[in-house]
Image 1: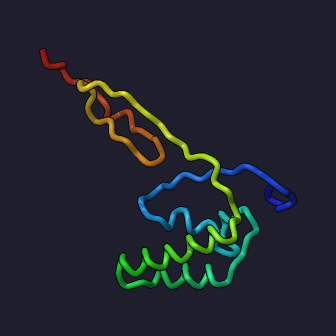
Image 2 (image 1 turned 60 degrees about the horizontal axis):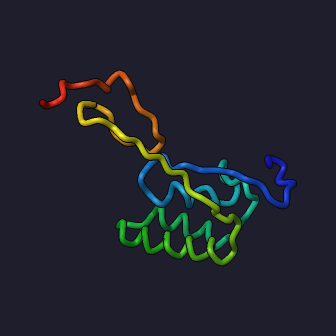
Image 3 (image 1 turned 90 degrees about the vertical axis):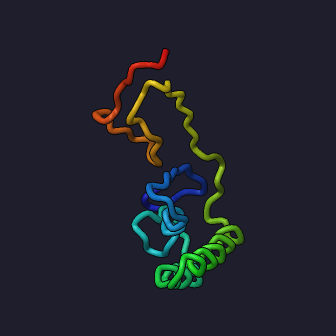
Length: 115
């Protein structure tokens, strides 16, 4: 995959922060996480504009344009999304869902259950 010598491959990406950019930045030409080899000058220009946008509303409008380019050119074909379900008893405290599903166990503990 690193040599881009493939017809089809499988890859994955997990958002590590709550912003569309975490998924959109991986397709920028020459980006360190662009494992597709795909390149689009308009997409790159829109990303630069999004980063300089004065408001979230404007940034999200630009992101929608970037997403439209991805849907038109399809450098990737999403097949599935990761999901996780955790059942946590009410006596557990300090356990919080996280984007990467990492949990600092030193902050997790048990309280005495209510009768």
